[in-house]
Length: 171
Image (cartoon, rainbow, N blue to C red; front, top):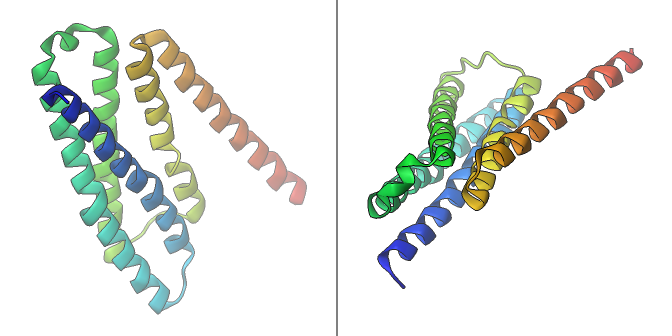
């Protein structure tokens, strides 16, 4: 196997690792925000710290590193419009990752400011970006990715409307 294919393989492997953390950590935040006992609170702090620093951050760094290596071996990809959008989405994911780290810090300090419902919506942000990135990389076209991301936003909006209607019906 060539160095290029090794780099692509490792990029995808660590991307999966990173996304596992991006999906799971906000779910831990949901449960942590609902926790009222000290033992549970401390347990979530340990889980969040280990997930963020032991899985997510190494996954993010290695994903970016192998991505840069791929780009160095294939510099003509920089000029493609789909790559510009992919890199924008990756930059947004990095910002989301940092935001997660700030939330881990807030929970560690017992300074959480958000409800479990807020974290349920926060948890959906990486789904939107994953859909866009995968469609961009597979199709190498911007418009299908934009349509796919729009579809995800539509699903999120419909879920929000249904949640509001259900809450209104319940009283």
